[in-house]
Length: 523
Ligand code: NOJ
Image 1 (tube, helix red, strand yellow):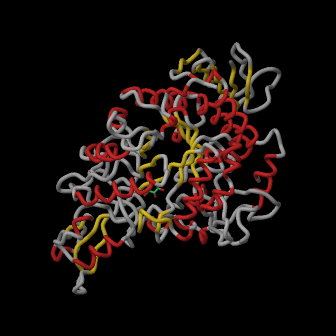
Image 2 (cartoon, rainbow, N blue to C red):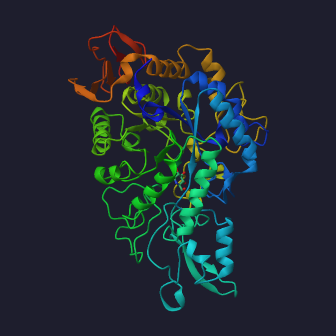
Image 3 (cartoon, protein in one colour):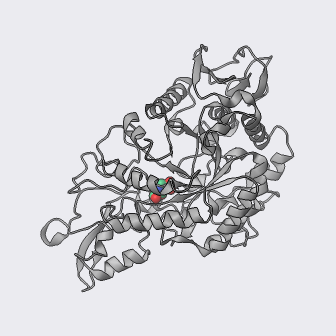
């Protein structure tokens, strides 16, 4: 056993992100659900993860697949209702697996009772003040109140029809039209959020991933954007929509609630590029953990990977927070495809998994990553991501990384569902990638992940909390963390292994050397 036991459970945990629509479908409607996740708990246990991060399952019209929340204190029937979540929490805890889940503080669904009330109540009312309603600019208020754009494309404002039937005020939505931004200056918003946190923590949830944790606070006067850019991560500061000073007061309030539940963790989605500003969110009285997306953005290039790791470590060190690592999630292209696709992309993805798992801190694996799933090029007619519509069919969106998991059998839907018409189609050639096939093959990506996670969990060498870069030929990386040495070969041609006993390599050695696009662990 390693010695991370003195530290909070999450400081070295491997989180497994479950995208509930895509994990497993228990009721044959073609969409994954919570009892599907319950049926996969033994699989997750044997994979060797410590915690689940569950994407949204709350009552929602699903305009953004649950990130448009109509009732944050109930589970959508599509996912099996509250009782199914209770079954999942109990089943996970029985197996020693923690359950963390998304919370969405920045916005609600337009189907939330508050928003309906705001529309009905009209301008200047308390109900409107829970959201960000403004009069329009120009004669008759026909122009949006400012020039902000939605992250999903198009303007961030939509004009409403007032109760008298006339065009009226505009409301802010940094994401989809159906995701109105809340007004965090209104104390009712925090009070309700606190109620939601306590509701789930009392039901045994072990923590939250906070969506758009750098959102919420808006600058006084809502000044225009200088650079019209709808990327979540801007290279240089100054985007009035995000990372405003007032957000930290909100996080301190959230932390005050969480601290009533020892062991509960908050993980923020903090798309903030500047290290010092990013670190501010992880101060002792704010979030426990923050996603750092540098590694997701790095190419399969030794310098790029080195810089991403070094940068993330430096950002975390500013406030002595635990670093976090992730290669994929439900918003980005799967890494097998990002790294070049085919067998090269898969080799590289496996190698990068070893790099990530060798680093100090918490790791997040996205469902299907352990199977080496690639992104899927889906036909136009099945696309569902709001980015596709909102961008006028220019941005295809994120559906390609959300295709349901293949479990067994030779034809779609590969045991994911009893319904052939799954919410996104599963490619026929995933028959080689099913869980069953990979369990039967000691050389499979799944077998590799299980072995890597077992080593990380059980070997004493994985206790380091600092890394030391060792000298390495150009195009390669070698670092030590604790008593573990990790080597990555992103070069052309094989790499002579450093000293030590080899405990795992992502690909067979070639003449005793590490093949290109491979990684090795030595002790
Ligand atoms: C970030 C989530 O990861 C993404 O899926 C979602 O669309 C936006 N936040 C809006 O809630």
